[in-house]
Image 1 (cartoon, rainbow, N blue to C red):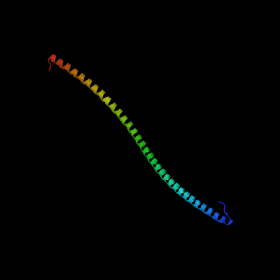
Image 2 (cartoon, one colour):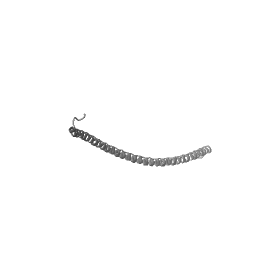
Image 3 (cartoon, rainbow, N blue to C red):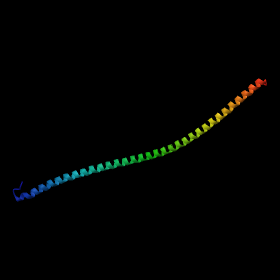
Image 4 (cartoon, rainbow, N blue to C red):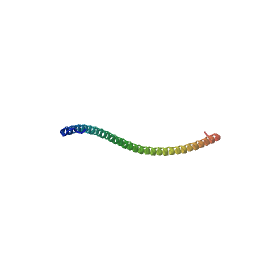
Length: 125
């Protein structure tokens, strides 16, 4: 591929320059397309990241709300347990009072039966 004469050199250089310009233009177009694709991917990534951050914030808020609710329910359970213990103490006292009253009434019944028996034996009515 050597030129046959010196006058063909400018033509060969011009063809080489034209080929190089064409190749450079194609490369510039490829680079521009790659940059465009990179920018689009970057935008999609940013949008996805923003979405994930919003979701994470929402989840954090839900977790905080659930933790507050759990804490409130824990306090309520404690209060209910205290109330249940108080009701048990009241119930136990009522049973004891009922047993004392039953024993008193049984003793009274027994005494009345004795009095009735004595009055019957003695003929007093």
